[in-house]
Length: 149
Image (cartoon, helix red, strand yellow):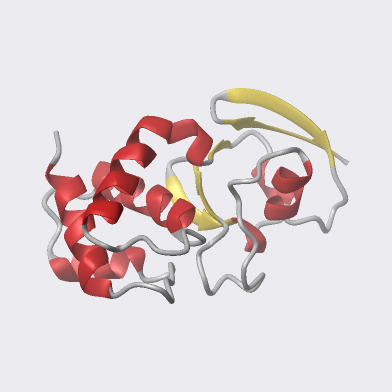
């Protein structure tokens, strides 16, 4: 089946299987920033933005995104670099597997919530797991990024 959608503001047209998940479609078309971790929507490694909202691409059928706007980390390079800088500065960056998912969620958080509380930040990032670093260093990095204009 044919599916058309905007990938980082570029209209793409893909021929996909009806039961194909977006994570697999994107990776098969060269979008390697989408990581496939758990394949069950529990780790957040495959996070991307669907119409500016975080979503886990391993649980979305590609057919469901007809006409939608999909943003991967390639579409927010400048912001992702800032987030990566703060993660590095705070020691919240070790293996890097979760970073792409975190970058997209944190970017969306900044756009959606103004001056979020710690609880709101935790609620927003809850679907993204990191097994290498501690939550406190991540929280410090996120707060530093959120303070930027």
